[in-house]
Image 1: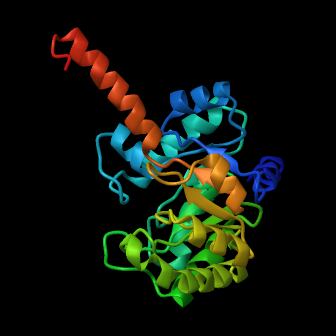
Image 2 (image 1 turned 120 degrees about the vertical axis):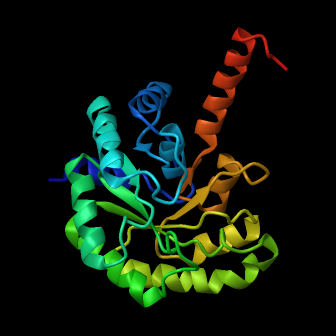
Length: 252
């Protein structure tokens, strides 16, 4: 059973111009660290979770292990926790719905859900992704479903301007299917971000990337949610590696 109070609190944090900032975590220890630092909510990053287990992204880590890790996280902090669910560990709507019900039972109040074909090529047709999203929402109506479109990640930056209309069209279809937010990772152009924010009925999530606009500027553009993906894990492991090199006499 989902914690509806936490789910409502999480939803309320998505305010265009005053975005929810998610410094993505990978385990209970990193979750407690961001809470102590002042986070208002917690979200995993699939790449980071996989890397912390010595695996690659794209659902290489078994779902059972993801859920064990999730339960440890939700048991360690009192804030809402959103799961980076990738493609839901399945193709058929009934499968992703069953898998998400397990995530909710482990304490998640929402998730990111991608429209790319994990382990395959390209994106699901919008109509097919709509059916998958609708099943996910039906499994937990109170959950915050952050519908992610990978249009921009799968194309070069110079092609992004020509993809905005399709992204917005997918966003409208996803909203009708029950999505609560639209995640457009890979989009860094300020004018395009502003356009997506202005024309989307869903709150927009932008991935903060090196060389892209920072949180303050994203707020000015109308963004409602900013996430850091694998950045925090890379920072942590780089510091750990540097300390280890010093211990073993190999400091650069």
